[in-house]
Image 1 (tube, helix red, strand yellow):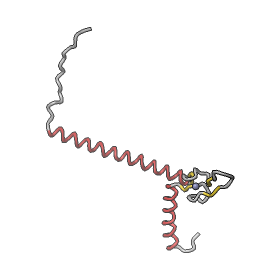
Image 2: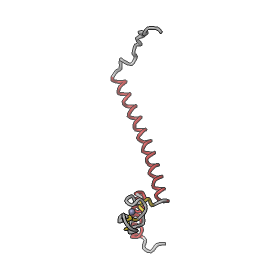
Image 3: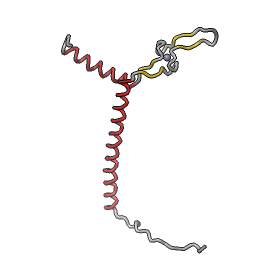
Image 4: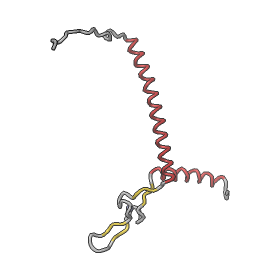
Length: 118
Ligand SMILES: [Zn+2]
């Protein structure tokens, strides 16, 4: 093999001026603003999709009893209902809570203005 070729490549990006640097930061800022907008768009779509799934599937498994709804006694066939979900084993998902809240607020407004609609 050849010995190490000492090819000293001259670095062209060593003489940078402040002006170029400022422009670079400006374009970088614009770039990040675009990225933020993209991320926001993705987050909005994700949240919208999540709310849609909460509309169709409002329940999840209760986290304390893992959807069983009851706790078995270590001996015999005795059991007690889960206190968190009242034995249903269901948990209302966070998105559904949000939807319910929004509906309640909107419904309250509608009820106060137009009594006995439908
Ligand atoms: Zn439970």
